[in-house]
Image (tube, rainbow, N blue to C red; front, side, top):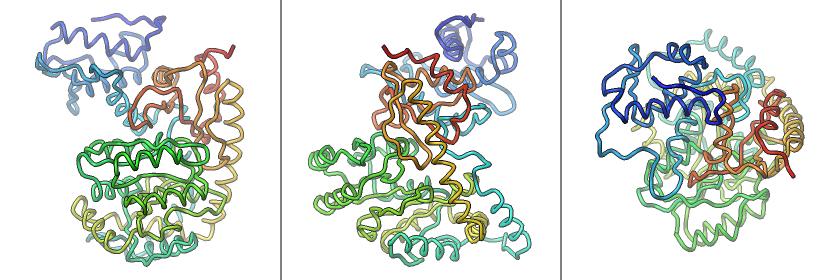
Length: 467
């Protein structure tokens, strides 16, 4: 069929992809013919099953293969006039690679080392509290036969109201909408506020899920450069004046991927610009519980006049409990609740009750204290290791989950990330987080998954030494 050279500098995954593409393009493999099974191809070429899975995933995304459940992979019919995916006359195009990698983060958890992932290890989460809540639910008379309330389980909304009051954000429980994680909350806000062609401000770098969602809606993304202190305020104002955006989606605190925290002066300036130039702000504050310092938020400064506030319990209780929330002005909240009903009826009351039970557990606050201390130690260790390998750090927040780093002698972290999968390592290449999805030397590191020495051995071997 084709040969694979383990000594080649081209990653094995790419060799398999290129081999199939050539066979399909020259007619050696006709439309409708079945590709070898994953295990057959892995055995024939002496590569891992995971390598073949990755290659087939890419070929499906590129339109060369089609996956049929319980049957395997088949060559897909491709019109001769069809342009090659990912190829244009405007420089590198990373949309396919980014979508593949984003999907792999969730599907390919079999990778042993995950410094590029976005969640916490299972034993860092509130597993005992979830189990106690689950046992309590099993003994309650929970109505499993109907839908939950449109805005979500009332006792949990009341608890969110009280949590926000502690952060000096004054809301009623009717201004709180429970969602299936923060991702649904951001999607609802985007669909309510954004129309095709609208100029939308986003953090640069920023949150990949949000960026993909906004692109899908047809928004024109305007990247506001992040700095260790928050934002490049001059660049922000220039973008606002030139493009008159409708909304700014931002994550001021412990931002993903940079870990940076916006200073109070920066928050004030953002709200001054929002008032002066009449745009809304969607504040993603999903890491608030991981912050050991009490800090103001955009919502606390604005009191939900121009701000939609979003947060989640998934990061600290369990990512499998998809419970997030948003808070907004009364009129806007009602629109968002209606959108939630249109797209998915209600959220899961069972999950919301489960989260509520965990949050009401007497050991919840102690869990957060221990988690913050554990993350602070992990930050110190990961930062020291990255510096030793020769990386530069964007910021050192000493809290939250992420460090954003680059090696001076590495221009494109995407290539390093793809090669890393061959070594059972999931990395977070920088182009995933950019509004323009251009090659980037930066990488996101999850400090909670940076304990394996093999990760830094790999980086040391792949990154050219500093002169």
